[in-house]
Length: 237
Image (cartoon, rainbow, N blue to C red; front, side, top):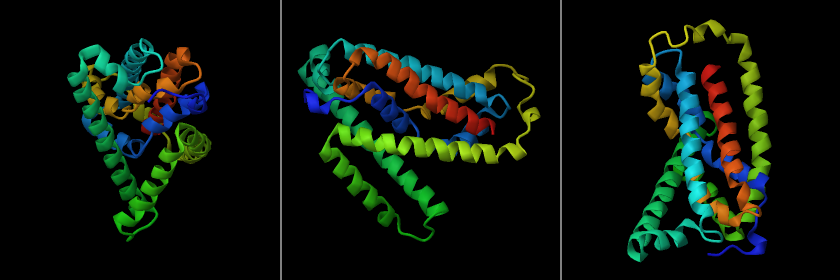
């Protein structure tokens, strides 16, 4: 679908969408999974390297999309590789987003059930969120962007509050020695940490709705940098 004037979003809104798309239940599981993989205090380096890899991949996607203004990936893919192969790629992307959505909503339901609504059936937690999501999708990209703008500052406030509460038990010596066992453990953890940054691929579709698509590279860099900072603080604390 070609974007229409009423479907345009600001650069700041695009940044917030990317940030919210990346941040999820991974922020709760990343410290455990990354430390289990790296097994050294240098796990924070793996987190940073994973973010850099995500930035590079995001910039490549943005540069590709900028070659086809006013078109989403589903449209220009057929021009790049042909009609049928393009449709196959589009179907794979749809399946990817469906699988990602299913994973995220199930993870969210498990976390809510564990910390907030113990004993509540999983379906009773998932269905309200799916209804709200459907309502937002029917209202268009602007409604989704405005909702994320409301959620983002609340998320930042709660995250910083929890981080500050952890300062009392924080010990900097636990991060030493840096690279005490060499670079190999850090590299072993990159695969795990890079997966925590899945989300830049949303720019394949989001760019066409931006008021200033020429600023899409800035959007992807800032949009990944914020979760990177969140992840590093979470792992270190």
